[in-house]
Amino acid sequence: SPKNPELQLFITPEYDNWARARCKQGSFGFGRWCSRCPVGSTTAAAGAQTMDECECEAGQEVRALAAAPGVSASSSGQRCTACPAGTFRPVGGGPACVGCPGNATTADVGSVSDRDCECEAGFEPEFATNSTSGRRVLVGCRPCAPMWTKADQGNRMCRPCAAGWYSLSEGSASCEQCAADGVLCPGDGTLSFLPGFWIPSTEWAGDEAVPK
Image (cartoon, rainbow, N blue to C red; front, side, top):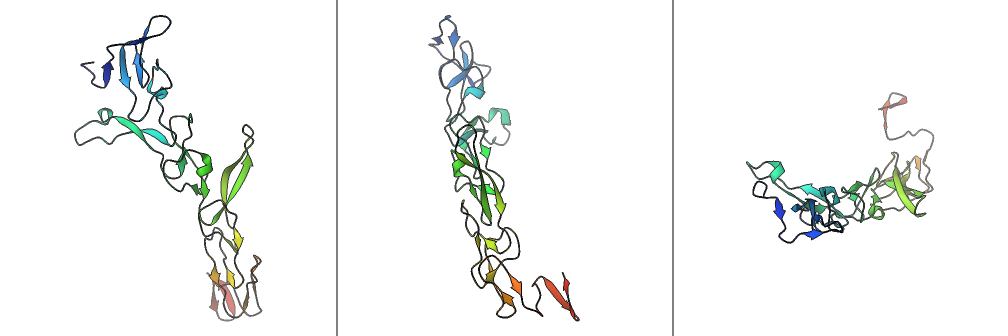
């Protein structure tokens, strides 16, 4: 169309059983005036009428291109781009990428499945069974309990600090070394203090330990 360069007139249109012109695969619109799908996307078949029917490959979504200075965003175009880290999009999964559960992310951009979601360091996975597929899916990531830790991203469970090490906070990605005297760190997820000693998060004031 001369008035809209984003629309293209196909010289040889296709026709359905009712002899009506329809847009070719990879385009959408009405009649013989059709607009191409965003770069990198296509349609399942001929006859698409809206851009929502244009679909990117798995692991991608349609986004507007950044407009050049002095050019309106509406004329800057759109194309398929990889899903950002922490999101995914399967085949036929809708137009936009879907975020992983809280405190979970992906190892890279362009993920195509929720199986790519992994809990961040300091968090362990919570799974549930999908009622439709019957498979186990990640539904959330909970922080490691005090005295437990997980150093790397992934769907492993938290582990207790090793003997001689401790962690007093939730969601720890590492443990600290216990003091040489006064603290018992047996490596079984527990921590205890001998009489006359106090938790490191307190300050000494006279004859008492006062919380910070």
